[in-house]
Image (cartoon, rainbow, N blue to C red):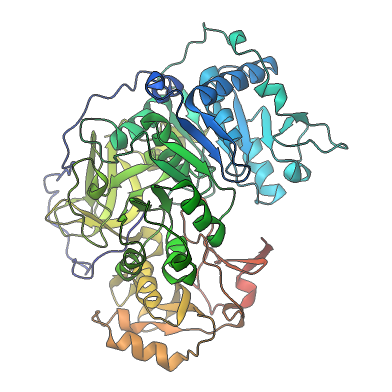
Amino acid sequence: MISVSSPQHDNSPSAPPSSPPETVIFRSRLPDIPISNHLPLHTYCFEKLSDFADNPCLISGTSGRIYTFAETYLLSRRTAAGLSSLGIKHGDVILLLLQNIPEFAFAFMAASFLGASATAANPFSTPAEIHKQFKASGAKLIITHSIFVDKLQTGTTVIAVDDPPPDKSCLPFTVLSDANESEISELISISPDDTVALPFSSGTTGLPKGVMLTHRSMITSIAQQVDGENPNLFLKSDDVVLCVLPLFHIFSLNFTLLCSLRSGAAVLTMPKFEIEAMLRLIQKYKVTATAVVPPLVLALAKSPLLESFDLNSIRIVLSGAAPLGKELQTALCRRLPHAVFGQGYGMTEAGPVISMCPAFAKHPTEAKSGSCGTVVRNAELKVIDTETGFSLGRNKSGEICIRGAQIMKGYLNDPEATLAAIDVEGWLHTGDVGYVDDDDEIYIVDRVKELIKFKGYQVPPAELEGLLLSHPFIADAAVVPQNDEVAGEVPVAFIVRSKDTELTEETVKEFIAKQDVGDERRALRWWSGEVLWWSGEVPAVVRRWSDEIPAVVRRGSAVVRRWSGGCRGGTPSFSSLLLSLA
């Protein structure tokens, strides 16, 4: 969950101090609270079940089927009993290859009941990618949709949530959901330090790795948001939270599903993002809260369809997982005047939430535009110099580090990567560059590895992307570095025109030149490769979500993934990009 920084912070190179300064630790504006992180995750999430047992808990946006909290609890226990009958036990892993449907929740919570863990993968990944995660996680069973069964390359047990293909050896989901819940052993001993969720992340560098999130870390992260007399995220039992972001991503799993279960709010599932379908669901079910990402914000801010629907029920819009410019935030606020719009920030390894917008609290305080709020309660945050590792004070950009019970236990079967991510003092190094201002609000500049080194300055691509997206004729943009003999590196912009507009290189250069930015930002060079000019309406979807989801821009039936090496070492070309069917 990343926001774009303000241009006023100090981002210029500076000489390191002669000796390490005193460590400056930042904490939440809100007081710490007692957290019941000794409990298993399922016990914690359903702890207040008697308060709203008959309230809607899960709503299928596709079928309209509504499951109450009591039914969700029962079906989760039955699913656990069914998994147990198939040999799943404490310490085992199940793989969820699912879109956003209620069965995802049943299966995830079932793993918790058994002391097992769930790893979730993108069902639209390639067969090789899915198999790699399956093998790395050590999963013993897969739950998926019948249309994805052909992607599986394993001889393990496969359960289809819909009608299993007749020519495939799959079991129906009823094998789980019709099981006898009383057959779950009450003798299962679950430790707070047992892994319950196993998302995959690249971390700050390298290939995707299994992130071991324990019962303790998951509960702590949820409690930091929704527990206490003044919760930082005030969800009520009559709220309806739209689940449009994929549950296989930790942001949606944590914020949308688990925080709602704890708070008694209903979750409305939507398998995939389509703007008109999303607006219809918001109007029909009077959605009050939703999590979004910048491309979705862009689609909402620029779509004329918003005028055709009643969206006044929305009170919370949380943007995260990628940088969001002030201009885009302002544009959406104009379209949804009744909603409180704010940003959060986090990473998978952090549990995932690191900071939260204070405007979402029960007793809210205003958040500045462009900020991603203040650090969560019961946690500590510091900023360190990216060269020396020394602690930095306010308004100084450096690497963000976070410490608390919510962070991961480590990477699965990778102690070396774990030691590189979490130091001996327990600080998780995020790889994100940011700063804390005078009001304790956090601004994220960019990733350490994505900063463009222009004439000794560190230029954040996200800042330039936000600037470009403020142009009315630019539908989408991505900025990457290119080697330069004089400057070291210069930024190169990949730009997509808005529909039925004219845009030239000279127009973009003039636009940049007029902005109130430093000279290094005006060094933007424009590369107009053919792959960037697409006819028809450009759907804005997830791009630069996080390390574990490639930066993508969808164009019709194709997905253009930004070359992981950027433009370092050469001029970008069509062959530098990977194309795959959506």
